[in-house]
Image (cartoon, rainbow, N blue to C red; front, side, top):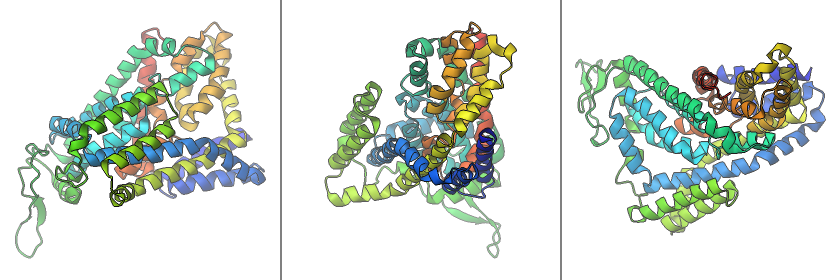
Length: 470
């Protein structure tokens, strides 16, 4: 019964948010509360929620101060050279823009933290997508999938969890998986190229000459004359072959334009560039070396960045206020997700769902448990937290594999393939940073991304089997 209710609860949540019948925060809170009553454990709802909030509170704190820290770094201009380099490569070609999004997300993902990856990627690419009238879900989908593949780095989380759960060395799990993960990342770049071609076909081939460097105002002129019945089009440096959607997107996005790259914005601190660069490198190094808990590192980093860059109290308050909306949205979403995970875990739904899935594996599949683990990692890491999967389900799968002569290393490697899909799970706090900063509905992101992310995961699995890794 708990198994059925668990799957029903998840399905109800996904359907309602994808159909936009409820906001993600409301759905994350009300649906699990209702199902908690259904299973006859309504009296324990408070305990489950408090336990879930307690577990996710460090994550919420990390995201809050990470948003402030990287928001300040964007304000002071730390990432402007990177942004300009990527945008010079992209110019106004939708294909280059989407491929550039994938490349940037993959590079920044080397820090092992999805939230920072999404903050930097969206800050860099959002103005260009808006100016060209491109689909923002393409940006969020490509960024999330690229980050999902890179999330398997030993300091990214899943590999360390697999190593801990099965008492293995993280290097023994990750290093042999590099060829398969490389194929997965290459597939993401190919996917980005295909999606870019689709965007180019939709909006036309744009030839805005060096759009980054030409910061001139777009002049709107009326085409068709007469009583104002004509259509508006940009009269700035030539848009050739662009259809109505392209000009509409360019006009509509003019208000946003390239404000994030304004070389004269008052928040810039060029004299402190190397201090900010050094502080960021030191912060990322401390994260990788685990010198302090990540929430503490970002708390200290944000406080130091604000104090040095903006010594005046009024300026510090202004910077915090400018990022308050993102902080509130993300923190609220994390605590709402704590209700969902708290009820799933507290009522025993997660355990029953995992046991049912493991028990449903046919006996004849025993010698192929690595393949089974890889396939199961897609839905399980999407519907469960990484902790729940790696510490709750993976040991059971490893035991089943051992009984048929399949090594724990093969099982551990196979368990990583679902991460491309996992990064778009509603239980991953970082994804709310992504969709929030990109101003994309979570349901729209889910509808677009899940199929491509699942395909990427299957490509990684197929490459792993082909190379004899799993």
